[in-house]
Structures are given as C-alpha cells and as structure tokens.
Image 1 (cartoon, helix red, strand yellow):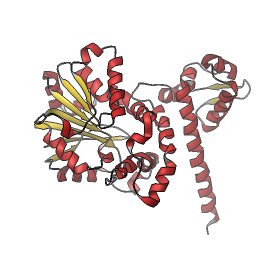
Image 2 (spheres, one colour):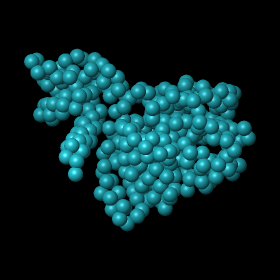
Image 3 (cartoon, one colour):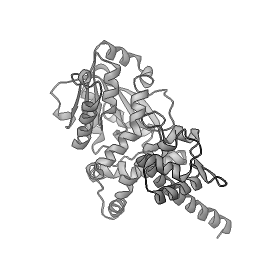
Length: 355
C-alpha cells in the first residue's frame, strides 16, 4: 500500500471530524447568541463575553478556544482576547438576512439524532418519517431558508418571471406547496397586497408554526385576509380550485409519490400559469458533486430527505437529484416545458415549469 496515501487519508479523516466538531460548536454559537454578542465588538476577553451573555464561564472559555482553533475566531495570545472578524460575523451573526449561514449548524442536532435509526434502515429498509424530526427540525429548516425567501424571492428571483409579477400585481392567486413554516407565503403576501396566497403542507406542526408566524407578524391584520395555511394534501383543496402561480421550494426530492403529486399540482395550475420549482443545486453525476456543497447535500439526503421518502414507501429521490432528473419528472407528470431560470445561487437551482 502507498504510505503517503494512507497518511493523506488519515489527515482527511481527522479534518472531517474536526469539521463536524466545528459545526457543533457553531451550533452553540448560534443558539446561545455568542456570535451575536461578539459581532462588531472587536477583541473581547473571556470575562467581557461572559458579562455580555450571562453564560457559564467555563463553557464559554472552551468554546472560544475551540472556535479559535477552527479559524472562526482570532486569538491574541498576549492579551488573551478573542475576536469575531467582521467578515465572519457577516455570515454567522446575521440572523434573518439572505446571507446567514448559521441555519446550517442548526440542522445538525435533528439530523444526527436519527442517525442510529437511519443505520438500522440500511439493514431493514424503510426510514425516518418527517414528523419524527420534531419541532427543532422544522425550526432549523425555517432558519436555513427564511432570510433568502424574505429578502430575495419577490425582489430578485421573480424578476426572471415578469408574467408572474404582473399577475400578482393585478390580483392573482398563488399556492406554496410544502410551505413549511410559511416564509414564502408571508413574504409574497407582503410584496403583492392585491393577491391571495395559500400555503399547504401535510405536516401539522409545520402549519402550526406558519400560523403562529402569521399571528405574530406586525402586519398580521393586513395579511390574514389574504394568507392561509392548510394542513392537508392537494386532493383536499376545493374541487376545481386553481392558481396563477404555484411554488415548490426544496421539497420535490422529498416526495413519496413524486409523479402523482406533480400531476396534482399541474391540475391546480390555471391556463398560462407557472409552476416555480426550487431545488438544491446539484449535478447529474457523482463527479459533478465532488465538492463541499455536494458532500453536504449527500449527508442531508441520507439523514433527512431520502430517508423520509423511503419511510413512506417512496422512491427516495435524494437531495442531489440533478437537473436532468428534474426535467424527466416534469415530463412524466405531463408538463410541456421545464426551463432552468438564470438566477445566480451557489446552493439552489430554479425552474419555470409550464403545463
């Protein structure tokens, strides 16, 4: 065997394990507010950070050392101070923005909590259903995506679909399939006050979170008559009810019956209506996904997306479905066109699908 290759791979395993621990420490930084407490404050001593957060000193001390070792914080050994660089704070202490990356860390606990069950499913089949990820799983998904939906959907992404913008400005209707905690519906309802919006999701806990978000909104009085959230399937909608615009954000690859569900979506689309699909940005080949984002998505697939489909007897399409497979699904479901949209993103792909 090649000793240099063994050594290189050993270092890679240590590096991957260090990355996992760094992400775990990052989760602590987001959940406890440590990142936010350090943002824009310059060098801080342990005592200053403890005073600012009210957290336990020994835990904070070890977290600081770990985050400095991982390269998240800068450490001045002479002054024994720690600093969160502004460029890092921009990504991890920027909740509610379209560039916040802290939501990724919050995916770790719900995903790894089910790891023993996923390992068993490798032997016995089946998987872990969505509802078993709990409320923190729903909150993590919302935190991961909300900033982008609120700040980019209406103002940037829809620029690629001017006909949709025109319909919604004139007073149309839209459906967000698999709406989760409701960020897409609420952001679009604010942007298009003449239109009506429906969020539908079979997860009752997700719909409860969406309804709570609506009720807690400062503009709830103006949103409530035009935004509704339903814990049901497409088949449970009023017979014949159709929409000018339908969205499916980061959920087609999760489906247990993808083709049948897509056919139901097509039936709910008005003539000349548009179905906008947003999926994780992945290549059609393993080699094309040989990067950090692809590796992350394969992990998300095994521990969340694929397994919840298999738990329902579905095909387990997986997070890295790829554009060719997406096009094939749309064609099989009876759609006439599936066009990739020219929207720049490192992590998402966008499609305009027409009946």
